[in-house]
Image (cartoon, rainbow, N blue to C red; front, side):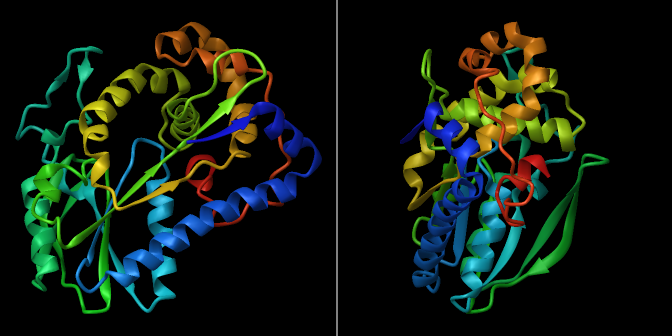
Length: 307
């Protein structure tokens, strides 16, 4: 795990923001290029790429950048959304999260994983499949929405928190590459506890949810303990399945997220402690803002969270 001091981040933000942003982006970009090279080398025997990672680890953007990197190796990437394998609401009972008193929306029981496993195995064997589509407006699974078959120079990328689940990975051990994405860095303030990776991911999620999902910071805080429980139960046990890993953290992002979120987070300081996020409270007002508008690349993973 990488560690960055808040003193270092603040110094770079104040004195050479452009170079700081460029260096962070380059480090992330090099990891994507390396993953693409490894996937390309094994694509004939492993045409399935399973992308896993906890909430707000940058799976969507990395998925897209990986596909573009694979094109430089002459390999086209097809995309499958794990969200399309959600089961129709009302056809099953959503299991509870007894620890937090909310429905367990992270549970694999909410998805038709056996069907997904079957489809991936068929694709690996060269067969054509009929993909479902999940309508989030009606919360309904629409079967056979489109068909897909992999050509010899193609791979399929699928991302989601359950992609390493044994129901899927068990049948694909010899035909799939596992790629694990995470924030694998921590930030150390001059005083007090460090900001752990899951805390940095909370900042990303709080920003994204408030901007794009009509969900205020208070609601993100309310759900956070359940999200973390889902990660412990459904992601952490299977991390060892990964062949490749990418740390998506961009050290300069703390300066952007905190400058936007600090006014809202100050209203819920007690809730931060309840969600095991007290070090964020302690860091409020300590992070230097950064002038980023002219320097942020169009394909930065940070756009997934700030737009």
